[in-house]
Length: 289
Image (tube, rainbow, N blue to C red; front, side, top):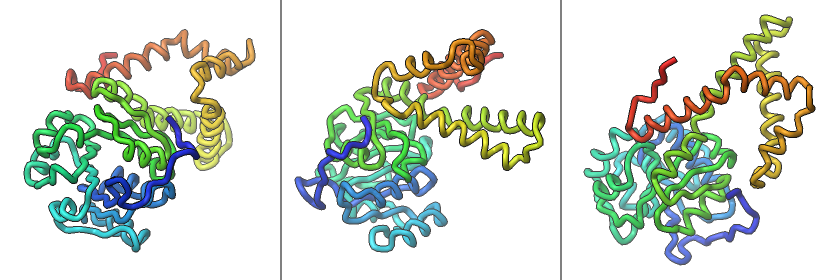
C-alpha cells in the first residue's frame, strides 16, 4: 500500500485514537519516525514526547517542533502522559526496559522497532494484550515520507495504518515470519551504497572525474532508475516490464545478462537467505564464499 489522498484525516481524540505519542529511545530511527509524524498533515497529533537519550537528536526534535515535541528524562513519565508508545531501543535491551515500566492495559498501544524481539516477548514483558502490541520496521527516509514501512500487526489497527500511510506508506504483515522475510527489503541500503561506491571508484580510475563528480554521477543515475521503477510500481508485472524494455543487444541488456551469467542473482539470493537466517536467529548471517 502507498500513500493515498483518500486517507481520512483523524481529529485529535476522535474515536479514542491515540494522538499523544511517546518515544522510548531517540536514536536515528526514532528521530526519523518522529520527524515524519510531525511533518505529515493527514493525522492530527496532539503531542510527541521523546526520551532525552540520545540528547543531540532529542534536542534537535524539540527545537525543530517546539509546539509539538517535548523531551522527557524518565521513560515512565513518557508512558504516563502518552497513549501510543514507540519502543526504539536495541533488541537486547527491550525486555529489561519493558519490565521496569508500568503500562495502562486499557490505554496504551505499543509499537516496537526492535527488529529481532518477538511479539510474544513484547506482550509478556509489557503485560499488554496482544491486540495492543505490534512491530514496525522502516528506514530513515520515513522522515521525508519516502520509502515504505513494514508493520506486523496480527490484529487490524486502522489508526496505525492511517498514521503510517501518512508518513509514506505501509505494508502490513499478519505474521512475524512474513515480517522477517519482508525485512529483506530494508537490508538493501548497505549493498546499494557499496555498489555505488564501487562504481564511483571505478569511474575515478577510468575518467578524469573527481571523487565528488563521480559520486554525483553515480548516485543520480541510480535515482533516475529508481524513480522510473517507482512509476506504476503497484502493478504486479512492473519489474518484468522494465527488464523487457532494455534494448535487445544494448549495453543495459548485456550488463544484466553478464551479471546473471557471473552468478550475480545467485549471490543475491544467498545473501538474502543468510540475512533472513540471522533475523530468525538460526545463524549469524555469514556466508561461506
